[in-house]
Image (cartoon, rainbow, N blue to C red; front, side):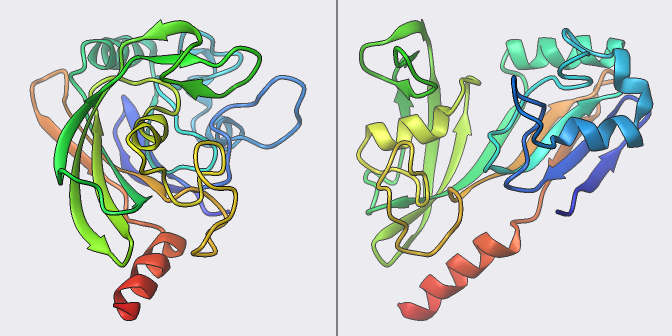
Length: 229
């Protein structure tokens, strides 16, 4: 499993996380995580963060089966700065998703609170606990057969937010068996969701945009659909 460093400064590193890899270990599991690799490459992160013993250097997260850009803080000063940016929604995030059906209108904002479904890890916009505001802006880039290639920009950072919001409008993400059909018509082994870019201002005011290239498994799906048109 290839882990790629796409941007690096003394304060932080940006990693292109592959799908299938946990960001940090989960309770009662010996499954490898990105943090195992990070601690070897950046040992200074061992004491960085709110819970460095579990999530060293981690200020935000991606689902296990979501690929793309994740920011790693290399010191506590930058961690505190980045955490504040995320809390104040000053980090612009863009994701690419392939969803079922033709989403209409082609661009809109989904504003639906997200809750935890009682007795599960699943999130819901219906009855649940720990309700939180959730806002996702989306734009359809292209219709491919009976699917929509979507650019999604979450304004809030809730767990499974894009997956839940797209499913809530009747267009779940391809390969997302938690919120969509169990079968996968395109043969993907995971959901078609990729954290394409992060954009924010550094401490000295410089605007930084970090992008992660779409991985081969997702490129191949788009190529296959383009050829079938």
